[in-house]
Image (cartoon, rainbow, N blue to C red; front, side):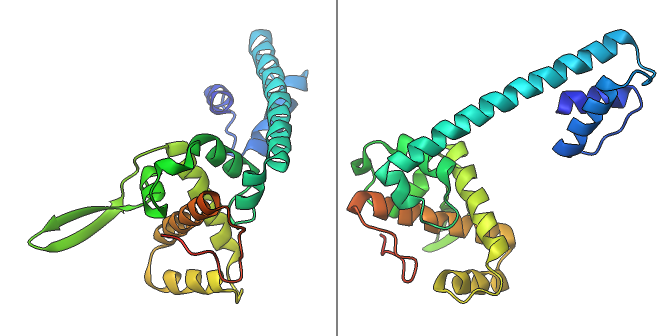
Length: 208
């Protein structure tokens, strides 16, 4: 998509950074007989349009595989009940965790994902900084994006989790709240998988 925008920009066609608009512009120019562009350029755009179509088909196939795996895997189903954890996140986590015994508790699992604050101690005082960002960047990103989706829907809800989010929002930046929720979800995920528990949204499982 960036390549399409760059090529069109070089020829004076500015397209917003929106995938739908880029696809529309690419199709209109590729199919137009009066675009004013040279044949070689039009052929290049058509090749890129065909390549995008092939990628769409491949992505649709992978999404079907992920959904089928999600439905057939008990562990994925268990953690998929957590708000902010969908089929892609659930299958990626189950595939990556492997041996659950390698983490002693939920905090260690969250630290492995890079979701705990960096800490510096001096003179007996501990100062917390931004998250460590260690571990698997892809898994951490999935959890944070899922947390942001939860934040966008939390307003007006009265359940315990939404109230916790509301209190956090009063004191902290939305990005900090999203990371805190991702950290919370990571700990719950570890607890569900390590203790073979079912997720109970009303009061949430306990975690270490």
